[in-house]
Length: 377
Image (cartoon, rainbow, N blue to C red; front, side):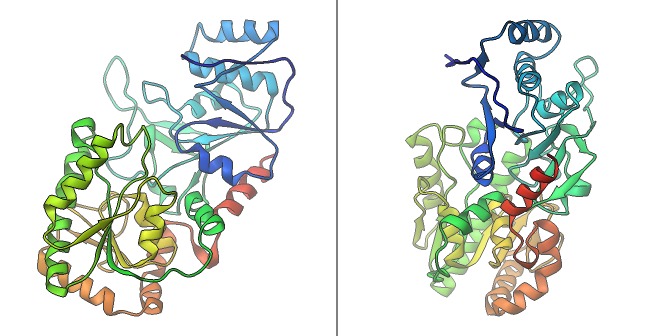
């Protein structure tokens, strides 16, 4: 049951943050700015006849959550409305886009959680024809990198304006948690991106499972031959990802069955556990997790594999990505990367890294987002 907060006065802050999945990093990045927040799970109701009449009228013609948010926006009249790209209706319609069409006196900013490339678009469909919908939108996309300017269209959105800002979790990690250069205590870190496949019907889930099965087979063979340590970085635990300890156990047992060599796991309840594990490893490998791009931005050596073109948009650069490799190709690539100095590796991969995720000259995603927000006031 939703909790309702009742207020009497308007909040005059010029920035409205709509809470959604992953919006905690956006709120953390906006520390220092005066913002109003609204949470669909704990709606704020203003004790005003005009407020109730506005909502009643709007809710007759549109999705009720959109109608509620639109009523809030009309009531407090912010200059900037910001949320994540997870803010969608049950029919995969971007709420930020719907709001921008119906109230045009604000700038709307969408902060994506990842770089949603081929296969991750989640297009809404026409209810009559079943055809995928593509929408030109004035919502500003605060993207991970320049790559997204031409390729990002989650929820069928084609954004008129895309501003690469980088990774907020990366910047928050570097600001709050990383106090000294990490020691490289593991040779290879695998970034887990499984979850329980029985609870995930996305078409790419089975492909991701196939890809990580191959990756584990190759890493295990390499580790046994070279007698090296392997770390498995588990995804952060949350109700959205792991619904119970049993599911966490499912993932851990899955990995243990795949390896003959000794492996260890991160504590997925610890903030930034994947960031820390990647920073403490000489090489981070995986298939399609945003954590891989974030590791690239922090200057780590990263290698991804996939059965086809990279779902992360990584070009066919065999310093970063291998397309459907044999074990021999994987082994020789890992040998080459590990033998290459950090400085040389960063130089070789510089163009692709900076195109995939904004990280030029120590670029700071928090500062970039703050500049985008304040310039819109």
